Image (cartoon, rainbow, N blue to C red; front, side, top):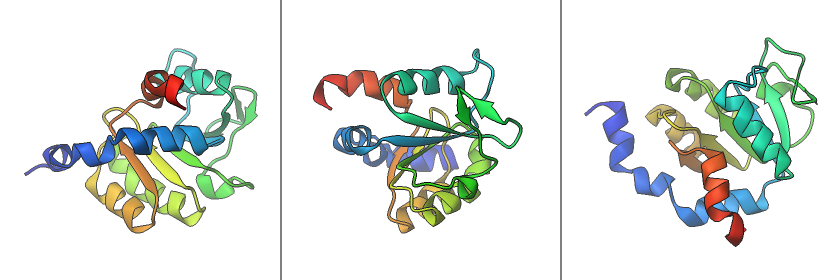
Length: 149
């Protein structure tokens, strides 16, 4: 069974509406790994939306100094303050070290965006006690549950 199918078989666990609402309701600071300075990229438009909803967006991109009027950090561990959610806009194969870093910095949740599916990263996050959302867009879910947050 391939990795995509493995996660897909357990998908409801990582799409739980109550977990999604809880993350969105309780979180204030979202570190966005892979946030692009290009306004045409999904990571940028999704982050702009979440910023407009009152969340503090913390860009994580080693190739930029500032994105969305926020200081950009080269890694999660370089962020000098607590982060509630790590939102991941990176290729699935790049996610295990991101999950390890999210656990190490004490994030409360990790959110793997649409198409970002990696069993190893999910296992790391789960073992680290993080709330987990896989293969969902945080913007879409925020809009879906906005009335119940």
